[in-house]
Length: 208
Image (cartoon, rainbow, N blue to C red; front, top):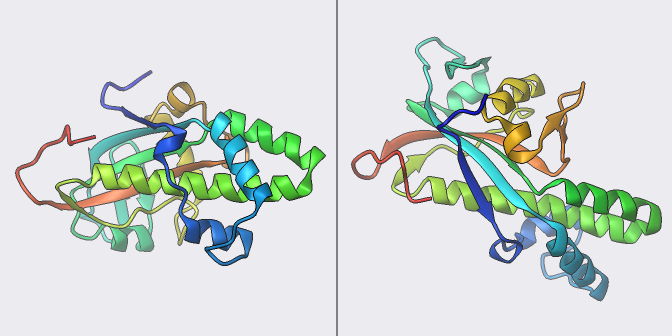
């Protein structure tokens, strides 16, 4: 069943500037590192990457200590509860770079370990950069908490299942979960971002 309140956000490959600090950390280099092979890998990645996000804005009940109740799922967590302190609403989202990136990585894992390593780092940095862009768009006119993802702190990856179901992530994004609650496509992110207050009158449609 598709919920009518799910918002789909997309971006072209040319719209997302990969964060150089994020890339450098994954490549174990400094942020100014460049090489012809890296540029080649980035150009090829841009040909197949498909940035896509499904998002909802919904209420959260924090009336019970260390319990975050979103209506469709309840997460017992001290870390998330503290992160959402002062919030009555949240954005819940799932984002992906698409299955073609997985296929590219699988091919490169066989044909070139160097290209696989660079492309894997580029695609990991790319999904993080896309998530930053989406969060920036969503928080326009709002004061928001930092985004928080299942798998961090004391929030189990098992909560990816109800989150993805609520976002209709298979139909909307092509995201599936395996028995370990890891996502395919592998360059995918789920996140919760609390809304602490509005800088002006409430506008749920936002500017996205």
